[in-house]
Amino acid sequence: MSDHIIFFFYLVIFLLSNIGYGFILVNLCKDNFKKYNFGYLGISGFFVIIIISYFTSYITPHNYIHNIFLHIIGLSSFYYYYKKNIKDYKIEIKNLFFVFFIFIIGVYIFKNHDDFGYYHLTYSLNLSENKLMIGTGHFSHGFRTSSSIFYYHSTLYMPYIKYYLFHSGPFLVLIYFNYLILSKIINSYKIQNFDISYFFSILSFIYVNVVFYRIAEHGTDRSAQIIIFIIFLLLFELIFKKLNNNEKITKFNFILIFTFLAASLKVLFILYTILIPLAYFSKKFYKFYNFKKNLIVITICFSSFLFNITNSFLSTGCFVYPEKKTCIFEKYSWSLSKNEVERLSLHYEWWAKAGGGPGYEHEMKEDEYVKNFNWLSNWIDRHFFNKVSDTLFGTLFIGFITLLAFKAKKKKKFKPKKLYPIYLIILLLFFEWFLKHPSMRYGGYVLFALPIFIFVSSYLEKYYINSRKALISSASIILLTIAIYNFRNIARFDTEINNYYNGYQISKSPFFYLPEVKNKIIFNDNDFKIYKPIDNMCWSTPTPCSYRNSIKVINKNGFKVISRSIN
Image (tube, rainbow, N blue to C red; front, side, top):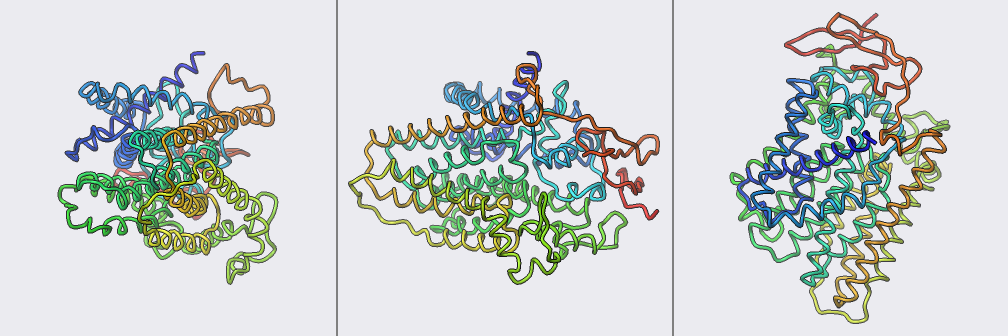
């Protein structure tokens, strides 16, 4: 029972600490932070902690002392601003915890995804036990593809709980998303504003909680795709709603923050910065957006991008791995070789185009397979059916059910919104995805959902929907979605316990499964050791943990520099 209490206690600390840092951010921006609900503040604070984590990793490991101090600041900030505006936030904190309890079942995980033991856990644990090292790309493929979620998770390394919440970042993003979306739906209902944003909010809520219900599968990409739904919602509000200048500036700043947060989680989502010019030049918004007054937000976003490419470079020698045009080969002893980067770049594209997977591998050579649509027929057979097709049909079904629930007989007079620029951007992003990395985990989920949801939302907007119908339809859909989310997670428990870890009892412990991993020391200079697992993945092996034996380490300017030994 004590494990459950500690597990829950730390979750609440991190939930509120994120919001506390969100308060700090908006207060530094000298804005009226009372306008923003805890969903916005939570995600913004999540981003701020990531920036802090990036910076401090150059100075110190994210150990107990670092993390306790970090979250004391976050909690103190939350308490200060909460007490300062207790009348405004008393109801909001109750609503936040209500949402938290409704969805809490998702954070209880026994079996994580396959990459968790390979590098997700050990990457974050390495940041908790060591300060930043140079050349870590030599440890494994996983250390070459950094994500800000690893940096965030390293700040959750706390006494007793240790690394057992290193999967909870996506869960917290889900909570903030659901709170933000539900708040928007409720507020729009109160003012009877059933526009494109209202229906898009409902559709996004259904999709995220039904399709992304399993937190263990979120990895580094699904949280980014969840945030992209919010970005489009903010874009609709900025372009189509009647807002004063301050409200427009606020929406735009959140678009900046959320876009760069998504890009930090997975670098390929940097492509969504194409939405920023669309927002900036809409309705002559640029005329009253003052860069000096919004310098803090711009600096934070730029810092995120700078840290991302710098850490990638210090790990691999490539600013954007594995894009070889961004690599500096052979100049540094710790950088990866040109041949290795080219080989892995080809391999990732081959994998995304269904060239290989568990139990199969296409007979065509990798370099030939990815050319001239040689991959298309196999991709359709291996990936489109049934991964893409199931998601596509599920998305269409969500849109169809929502149409049935809200469609009315009476139409209202309104000017149709000009959505062509948005559709064009989605189309361009889709072509880039399809031609380069057509895997659902690389952004496919959101690219299939967005055009369908935008179409359905704009279609429903033309109908006159009375408050009674809106209340019944909205409440029914929301309650059904919550029920599906919880039912699927309960079914997941049964599968995980019986099929993977028979006898694992949730009543005794909420902690995820960790195998016993035997390891050996492959490098030792007394004060610094490198470990290698024996016949297993790294998991929670002491760090740094490498899958290679031939490792060389030197000290330079206070940093450990890792290179591949010639011997």
